Amino acid sequence: SEALRSGLAETFFPDDPFRGFGALPPKERAWGALKYFVPALEWVPQYGIDKFKFDLLAGITIASLAIPQGISYARLANLPPIIGLYSSFVPPLLYAVFGSSNNLAVGTVAAASLLLASIIEDEVSPEDNPELYLHLFYTAAFFTGIFQTALGVFRLGLIVDFLSRSTITGFMGGTAMIIIMQQLKGLLGMKHFTSKTDLISVVGSIFKYRHEKKKMPHLFWVSAIAPFMVVVIGGVFDFLVHGDEHGIPIVGDLKKGINPISISQLRFNGKHVGVVVKAGLLSGILALAEGIAVGRSLAMIKNEQIDGNKEMIAFGMMNIVGSFTSCYLTTGPFSKSAVNFDAGGKTPMSNVVMSVCILLVLLFLAPLFKYTPLVALSSIIVVAMIGLIKVKEFIRLYRVDKFDFCICMVAFVGVVFFTMVIGLSASVGLSVLRALLYVARPATVKLGNITGTEVFRDVKQYPHAKSVPNILVLQLGSPIYFVNAGYLRERILRWVEDEEHICKGHGQDLQCLVLDLGGVTSIDNTGIGMLGEVHKGLDRKGIMIALANPRLQVTEKLVVSGYIKDTIGEESVFLTITDAIASCRYGLRRFRGKEGCSEV
Image (cartoon, rainbow, N blue to C red; front, side, top):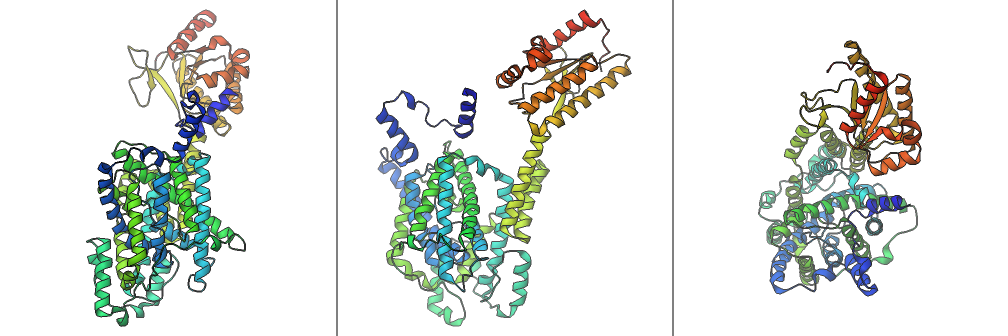
């Protein structure tokens, strides 16, 4: 029971967040637990003007980015532009209370926006029923929040680990490609366009509606200056020349006022529940993976630590409360967080400053963005997305690990040519398959002695390592479970057969097998049975078997099962390979009296 408790604790509490609490009085334990779940209680008491001046500058800077990005990403999701600003007001306040990263800036993200749109549009059209479409976005955000909070509370962050870095790289690159293609509608001034995201549908739509293309102002190039300047310059330009009267699409009216309460608009009944649950879970996993990866990357630069489970709770609270206040999914986007980091943000207070700036915009300045040309928003998105297509990373993956490159390309190609869900699912499936292959087909290597030492190494990696006469030394480097037990049995017997041929070539016999179990971290009942079958097979051939350096957990199971006492004997278990070989030689001299075969 102690081993089970220890194993569960190591699985779900690897960082042991409550260590040392047992010696504290009850009140201090309660206060410590509260500070763990509300990190703001730790940094606010030590907060001062010296940090605020940095956070003020960083907050204003990321607010200037949040305004155009919020409007742009809301348009990308086919939502009213004001929803993007709402989503940049309430969630940052929640993150400042519950978040553990000093560098993360909260907001909407392009990938999740498009993923949500691609799933919900299959159920409800934003043109035919915009009200229901918006309500389903709120409901999806609620389910996302519940899912993320549950993962954090029950410390199930290992689920997010199934999104490998290669999968995220390929998925983000593919998503960036289809987002850029979707922005051709705004860049070309087209009124009709496909809602699908795959390459074939987009190209077909451009060809079908090519007569709608207009010569647009070259605001795309201005966007290189800064997103906020594009919005300001584009809006002023459109207002002065009355661009909307000349066929230049604009954002349209933006109502003043803070977020209206939307809790009554959540849809938990009817035929759409399955769709919003699916949208919430998929986008929630993606948002967690991006937000936590960004937070950890920036924290490493400052030599700081963030708690992934705290981040999940913070993201979950953001999205739950956000769904009640007219917001859709938010997380920690890379672009905004990088700006926050570069601007010198010291604490989550920069998110509060950003939120205050967005509040002022909502109360007083929102109508001024009415004349923002859609081409300006499209250019902002395109420029932001270009940075997500990491060609150098693709090349590096190809050079380092071909399988990782395949995982990356499956995500990229799946997203571009099919759908985002298919691309992400196929890449995650391939990653899981790879992990299963590593478990089901673990490596076993033959060890040889480095001359003049007691060190044993892989004879393929170290050609000068000498095989031990009459004795085969094998290293098992993975847990032995029911999944790989059959393969290991066949592989060990094949090693034995090959070594027998080598020895017979010198006119001698293989007489002892030493298994180095130092890398075997665990073993189940099937694995123990496999070792018993190997022993029986070798015993019929007159070959002794010895175990070297088994770990405590493995040894305990081998003892309880009777394998050591009843099968191989306690005298066949040794601390080191050298001890096992010495015992084998002694046994050979005493019981067999045979000459050893020559060194191979």
